Length: 174
Image 1 (cartoon, rainbow, N blue to C red):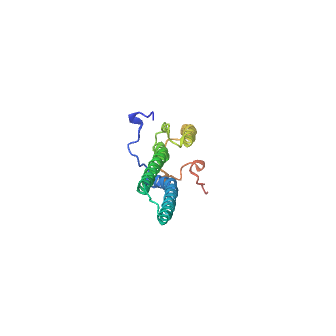
Image 2 (cartoon, rainbow, N blue to C red; image 1 turned 30 degrees about the vertical axis):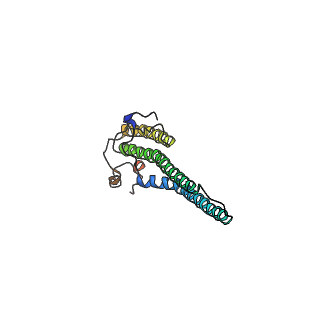
Image 3 (cartoon, rainbow, N blue to C red; image 1 turned 90 degrees about the horizontal axis):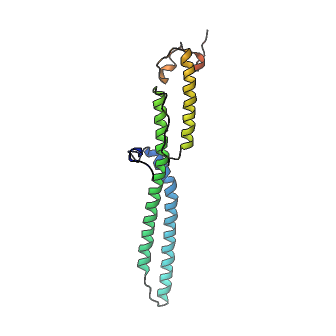
């Protein structure tokens, strides 16, 4: 995989709801197809067995076929679940890292950027977020040079009427 020990996530389930949706959307249709195929195979096998018994022929190897079919179903279903969970982790983990990057940026760390692992699926989004944060850091730097620095949170921003109307989105009425 190429990841060193310290670059691995400490939790495999990062966003349970998102990962459950991803796993179910990939796994459920395939498991349904496998169940239908297994059912068709058992139905056709039972018909073949009854015809052979009617003709007085001996039927052997049916138990082996049933066990092999069930084993294939279990192995294929487990593979689907594991692969889907691994792929969901590449989306949910990347999403979590981007969210944490944005929270940290809003918290005041203007140098932080979204650094994803090489196998994560949201690299293009992380690149766009990083470009936006670079742009925003530049805009904030220009704004900070003109205005005194004020610590405020989004919940208190609308209460402060002394802010510039262009930055707060609130127009002043005279």
